[in-house]
Amino acid sequence: MSAHSGPAPLGLLDVVRTNGDSFHWANAQVSAPSVYQGNTPAWAATLKTPPASWDTYYFPWLLNVTGIHLYRSQQADSANFLIQNISGNSIQRDVAGLLRAASFEGALFAFRIWLPKLQAVSFEMHGTLTVAVRGEQTCTFATKPLYDTSTTDGNPYTVSETCQWNYAEPGCGDTTNNPCANSYVTCRQPNRFFGVLNTFQVNLQPTLTQINEVAVNRRRMI
Amino acid sequence: MPQTDILNPTPTHPLNPDYGFQRKRPVTHLNLKANRGVPFFRDITDVGHQFVLNWNDKLASHARKLKWYYEQYRDGVFTLIDHEGGGRHYVGRFSQPVEPIPTSHNHWSVQQVLFDEVPGSPMVLYPGDWQDDAIWQLLISDFGDVMAAVSGSWVLTANAASQSGYEYVGANAATTDWAAFQYYGYGFQFWARTGPAMGIGQLVLDGTVLGNVDFYSAAAAAPSALMTQLNVPLGIHLVQLNATATNDIASTGTQIVWDALKVMR
Image 1 (tube, each protein chain N blue to C red):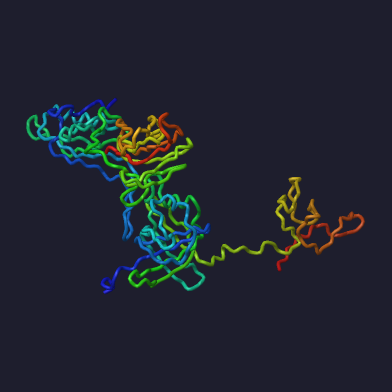
Image 2 (image 1 turned 45 degrees about the horizontal axis):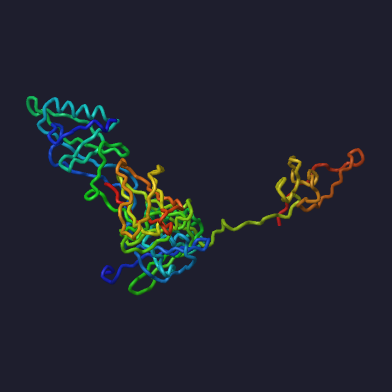
């Protein structure tokens, strides 16, 4: 019965990559309101007649969408968007040029099922993109979650008796090309030692006093 | 110069294939289309014509000669003339073995031999029927794609007289500016309008300078073939129009124009 209920639903894909450029692709050439808006990419200047309203014009580049899975958790929702990679001038393909101009890695996307007669959305999915396959005829974008813990930095440093600098990096500043053991006693730039000393050690002669000469190299996390 | 070895030099030559072979040219482009909307198109390979030929009721000497053409030019090319098709030349080889079959005493049949045109081969006579065999390679495809690539100061300008309704107009102020178009075929004609305020460009084919194109004319003239390059082997070729920043001494401007190519197929 659905085949008799009106114009077929369309797939609309809005993409905003991290440099601010926006793209709108669908499986038909259609004008519709978009979820994400952005800058018109420089590539648009090569078109015969760039769309007057860039963020509501959908290019018919979306060939297929497969593998949609929604998990309702931090697990990445997944989908594959198959985009044509044939159009363009006689020398360069459009998508290949766009991929070369700037990265689509991490670009925000919103995919919707659009009911053109109702001007309404029956399904909507958000995430970020990663380029899965760059083929001769097509380009496949896969998805990554909006919140990806692997992209979040951990603690930059720990409080420790071990110096936090890598040897000879700018914070260390030593130029003798003789790596230390990240301990205070082996440090040749003690005024830049980046650690917390809780064992005071004086290099007294063992003949005068018996103290431990072993460098303390203990890490303590807080 | 194996292209000078012609299998069937005259219309009455005994090695002419039987009447009625199919003039087939394999698909050389990619074609994709979304659910709804215009298709996308791109030439990607330079495979040539392919003809399946038959020779019925030939003498043994003819059958041996056909077999010789296969053996001799398995890794080479010879010329086949399509006498029924206006005498057009094709340079290629038999890409499958020639296997004569005896049908009666001194009567032989050679069936289903595939003649494969080989791209890049020089020809004794290049195809030159611009009326019937050549096609337009427009600046704007019928699907709306701008097919020429440009670098520098070029403006896409509507012009009803242009082949696609649009032309690229180059300021021709810097010698680093260029427009380029890649096509599949043999030779080409470069079409553009001329006028009293037009400059001089340089046409380059696959990196080889063909010469200058003078867009100047005392009165504005409709697009015409400003350069014809006939002797080009089959292949995928790149035509480039370079700016020269020069003009005719009588010209009042330097503009150059990319309108269209007419390409021999």
